[in-house]
Length: 138
Ligand code: SME
Image (tube, rainbow, N blue to C red; front, side, top):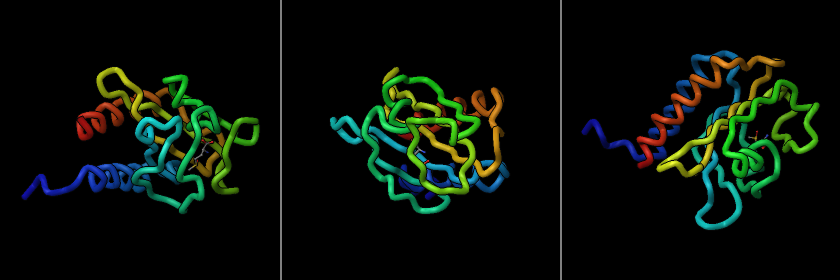
């Protein structure tokens, strides 16, 4: 059946498409609020495995987006003091929240091995992707 993919399989396909087709998207993954805990949990992703499967709210770029509800574009990760390094090859990061019924339920997180690659076009595109993901999840 056409609709036999699970939600996680669909999200993994989103990660695969983005990583495959956009050359400066080198790690693409989802983090979601972990039940009623004040932390994020790693969801589907592509790229190098990360040790950071749980991220407390407020910690790192991802944890800050969990509380700000705003996009966070980081042109140079080495210039950030509240940053969680996953790989030494990463130079830049973008995190865009996912809203379901106006609630920030998680985020897409993209790491780039290219310095300062993200523009407002990436923000608008990833906001669109996150809206489609919200439909998959709701
Ligand atoms: N760099 C992120 C942690 C997640 S990894 O990029 C996969 C952060 O500072 O929140």
